[in-house]
Image (cartoon, rainbow, N blue to C red; front, side, top):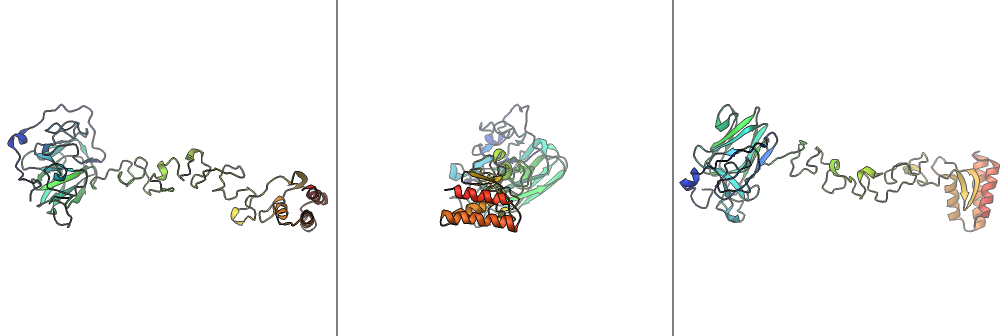
Length: 372
């Protein structure tokens, strides 16, 4: 099988074309993860200095300035389904891949070096190998070797809609030291490459914030959050979401940071919104056991507009005197029944519990009688 819809016979003149470019002074160092997807290059175009901020042999570019160059036997190839001549399908990204001819120019040079790992996706009609060196031009110490096996039609995948090289495997390796070149001489002619990745053993796995989650699936690309927590399910992780609970109130002014409460209601004015306050009326009795979670916390018992002057005490179950008098008003069938109910409550609090004075009881009954 061949990677193109015709034999891999490229005109000699094309193979001899080498662009002479002035290297840009500010090159991107490959100290973090860099992924080469070859998009932006033409069909059968020598890659050359495209990834050094320069151009391919057909003038494509300028490409990203990664301080990476390729020899003249490294070419890009576009999927035939997208107007190119590539006999491949299901490529991991875009519609362009890279392949290497037989010859001396099959080396990728990275003068500034890269560390930690190297990886890529490949589809192959034969076995091969790729070798990582700590010197330029495939020299120096071997840091890693990746072995390739025939896999182009082993996965049962079909084309998209056409293409024989339809199966892609990922391979990667970690290493110590600083790599400065990669030799693809063991993978010439019948191997396609995509998402060649420098700095990671996982192809395409850019992890900008170093949290172990790659950028393509990271819900906070620039803020480390390995747990990917997303309370409101809006696709933004909590550590980078300016409104964690999704209630429309920014975190900096939200009185319930992790509980949605658009109204920001705060019954007791303690700075904690009712939606997340464990004691909404601040009476010292937790809401889950409070008979009246939103008690009338007036300092004295007020019935209607009449202030009895009696202390509005909080009982053990969280009810205040005012709460119980208010409940009596709702349950009474008449004004007389209400006055009698207030008198009975006052009697219990005064005589049985000693919580109020006789005067307090008398004043509460008087206010009840006044109230319509």
